[in-house]
Length: 275
Ligand SMILES: [Zn+2]
Image (tube, rainbow, N blue to C red; front, top):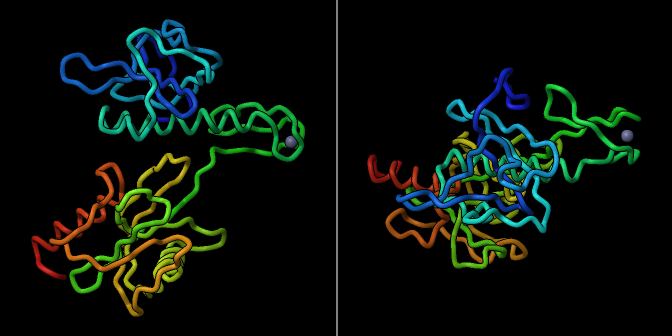
């Protein structure tokens, strides 16, 4: 099914991901705690609709839409706007992923109203997630920035680092953006070498995760240490070390693929021993 266009004959209530400066509108979930994305016949009943909503896809047979709310838009009574990170523990995982898609698409439309080459007003392209310039034909697609993230292993230990930008004494797997003209495997090897001075081999795909901060796609790998001792790039890394699964420092929260990489390693070692 297309993610771009709603199915024909769509009727009934829909779910509205209302985005105001990167935050998403939610209402309290009755009884169980947590929060829900509001459901209604149309966004007008929420008092927030400003322009054409963006179709996000169908979830369990219900259409989901993103709505761009002006910075001074007030939430309806009982509802509130929540930042994506704060929203994660409050809603279902699938809703959180859709909320991230909504935030990115709303921001994309806001920042691509005009052609980047000639300045003409752009228009949406039917059937595609794109905007086209009617004057020069330039197409603009939602921006995605691929970034690799890698768990490096050496004899039952993993390499984790505390980044300069973390702001907390947390240690995570190494990550970095892919450069134009570079394969993902090359990006893995380069990032590890640049950030901690270590060479790796046996680079294997692990999984991926959309990471809407603001528009990354995290592509996860595992790799084995192949040589070199830790020698950190002090502009980016405050500290890096090898950790045993039984002696881990503060690690990232469960919402992240970094945590999934670490949890997967811990589970494997506890089941099979050091492999
Ligand atoms: Zn143009």
